Image 1 (tube, rainbow, N blue to C red):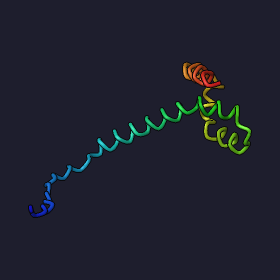
Image 2 (image 1 turned 30 degrees about the horizontal axis):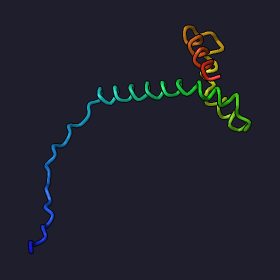
Image 3 (image 1 turned 90 degrees about the vertical axis):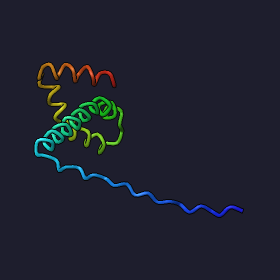
Length: 93
């Protein structure tokens, strides 16, 4: 009868990453901010539809507060953003 095998442990040596430079941190911060802004604007269409169809007033109030800058852009004719935003929101209504 063969003897049971013992598990073998392997240890991999990793090379530590060099510390990030200030420029890399700034680029990462800028890209993160751009991604957050893109998601925020992309959510404006579905949130407009939710605001229109919601019957729960606190939810409507929260959506109005959170997306107030987008509403301001759409209402004050900041071209070409306002026409793009209106067309995008109309896709969801």
